[in-house]
Length: 96
Image (cartoon, rainbow, N blue to C red):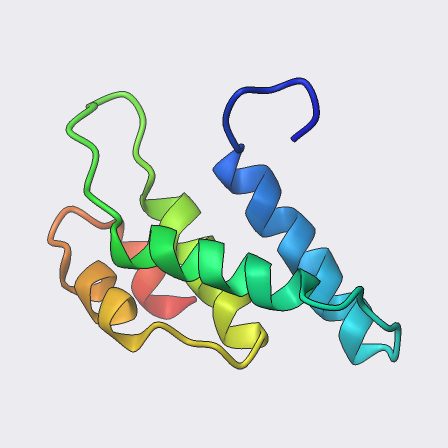
């Protein structure tokens, strides 16, 4: 993102969600834009590690990323299964 030295993961996923929604409505995306986004998000999904921080968890961020990748018809099943197996994941996630 402009002015930052690293990507904001939540913002990047949110922007991708918007991009996928626009594409499904018939808007044309710039060449290579979606594939670069999918590659970046897939890499993050596959390399996700559980945070040891007791005050903040990135599980929701990972769940949202996986959801949007699935909307883009690019599900990362291995990462979905790993997230599902996390014992500390909030009970409510199993019903979303």
